[in-house]
Image 1 (cartoon, one colour):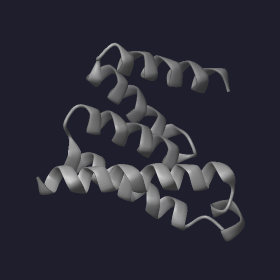
Image 2: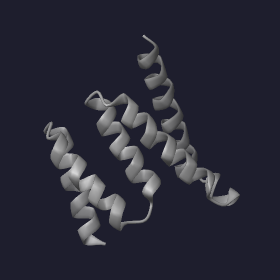
Image 3: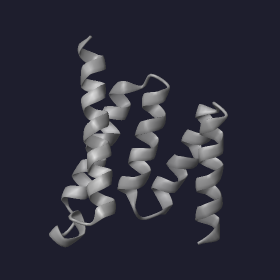
Image 4: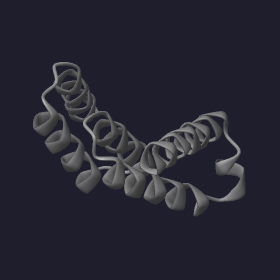
Length: 101
């Protein structure tokens, strides 16, 4: 609903302004109260990755993949979920490369 949209926009604005704690706090609140946890886990993982939290980001990306893998097959094959899975896998590969350097 409208509150979710406002929270999401506020979190993204905080991220763009470089306010890590503000963005992270809002995303954590959304993880506790909203469905679609895989989306919020990816959002938080990207924020963590941006600010150097590669290990934490890797964990959140992994948790998002586990959540997606629990979806029924017809849901896992939707365009949005396939894109999200690809985004997760690309980020995990980038993190693995960064951690191995």
